[in-house]
Amino acid sequence: MKKSILLVFIFISISFSSFSFTWNYSTPEEHGIDSNVIQKVYDGLKDKDVRSCIVIKDEKIISEYYKTGYNKNSIFSLQSASKSITSALIGIAIDQGLIKSVDDPAYLYCPQLANAKNPVMKTITVKQLLNHTSGLLGTDSKIWNEWRNSSDWIEYILSRPMTATPGTFFEYSTGNTHLLAAILENIYKKSLLQIAEEQLFSKIGITSASCGTSPEGVGDGGNGFYMTAYDMARFGQLYCNMGKWEGKQIISESWVKESTKVQARRPSTGSRYGYQWWIRNYGKNGYDGYCAQGFGGEFIFVVPKIKLIVVFTSWYLGDTTFYYLDANAIADSFSTEQKR
Image (cartoon, rainbow, N blue to C red; front, side, top):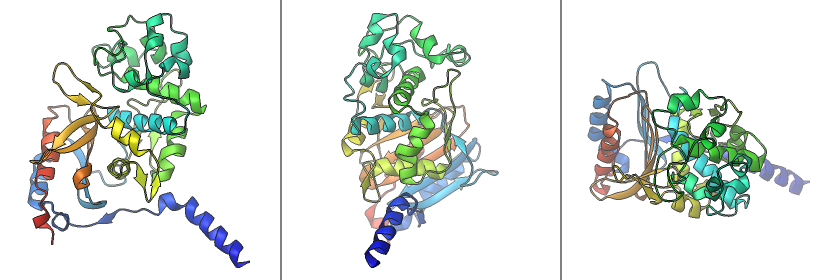
């Protein structure tokens, strides 16, 4: 009888383990961060439509800022920061053997690509969709509105001429990520949101998420996720922990490493890109890091070496340089000498 009760207790504990994590709070100085630097960052946000900023260090929230009318329960559009979530789901599918390799032709997992009239499209690999070197017509340009207003986003992309040989040229395109979402829905036979909830969100306690869909009914993995800034921070924390959550490996460490190292470069600027993550260095020590970035100022900055995460949600259409400068300044202020 006692053994039965113990087994039930263990089952319940495992079932609810994803919700046992709650954010703890601390001060910047207790984690080696200069609070004056954070305050200077906040002062610079007041004349911009930045709606929240959360600074996490050592898995604790050490500071947070909200524009009047917003709080920790507010739901924000991630815009293109959604791409990093879709990348995580692709990694999980690979971990589970549902996708054999990023080097596989994407058409093996995507009926729409398998039926493409242009034979070159059948040579596009999963990797080339992940790092935006597919050669497909880029959607994030003057055709954005036309593409988004079309009745079938995938048909629109595949019916247009290609702009480059697959694997030869980087062109950032939400259309690539939309095909990754279609791949996920095909192999799991579920909606993108259901996949995300079952394979990722429920395992790390994200409860606020929703996701839009395209006119043809495919989840908008490139631009359509919504959640609170706190839940965005959970996603960042998962990557900061190399895919592990409370002792359990949710995404393989190898996928986290592969997707957050340089896989391509933007020709015009030299900006470095992984698998749906932007790659940068932070602070005077040049700490390796990366970020999810969305239009209007949605960011999840992750600096694993010093266990730092900075989340921004915004609707600011000006120069985005200050977000990087702010994250860099916070990382730059880190010093073990500041710890009490």
